[in-house]
Length: 348
Image (tube, rainbow, N blue to C red; front, side, top):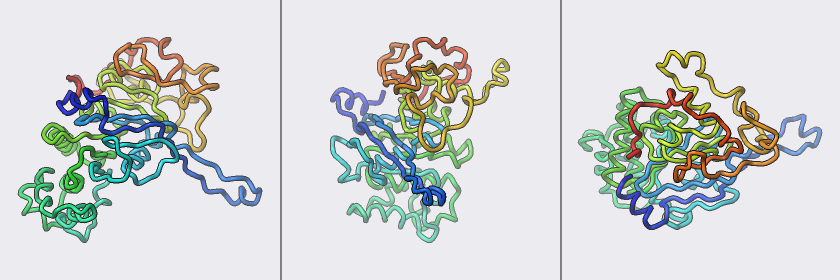
């Protein structure tokens, strides 16, 4: 646990506090719906989501595409307004987001091809009324050194990794206490992924920056995070430390995600598939969000949404939303799929 997170935990107040956040997207009506005068449908992207991030902490939000991860990131940064719920940073509402930075998945889309890196970083500073003398410091903090060699370059002169560092520099210029990183390494090769993860860890260690790391890759969550939040169809199904969630998963969905990871164990051959079916489109099922794909679902799973409560492990902070979590067999059968052999970044 980082020193900054210890301070936050001692004060009892998280840096980021999300409570009861819900977002619904309207579905455009078809011609048949219009002619039949049927009302338009709606998709629930987030449903009563709670989330905390402490100062200096790295929290990974994991789940398949369509789980609501990016919507959550956009709500926190103020790009989308939640229909209900509260989002606070240091106890304040979304009136001043200087303390929150954002790193998007695709640096090719984030950077304007006609603008230099210096101009890109300056844009955020100008918008927030901050001094321009932070440009070089931000580039160098993102390991684009010396800044003078990169300040006047345009994106086409950079590699993919350098472009993502430039995007990170833009976030750092605002002197953030929290950075939301939405799939920040998914477009990079393996070696560059490791370098960007190391940069994120260094910025957390040296500057005390907290990170909300959005990813579908549980291996990355294991490598970088202190805690993991499992999101599915807009609902939190499991949360806890990386060790708790990825070594001792309690929810069938978490286990399915882990079982889908590649394994070098020959006994695991043929098990690398996710739960039956695909993530539903349109309205979410009643009760447990995952019940239509879950081999352990019973009638009760359809009638009520299971609360997020203490997991059978009994470990502090490990919570799961599953009526049958205590009845499921031990997770040893999926432990061989857990990413990596070492403890995670925040595991100590």
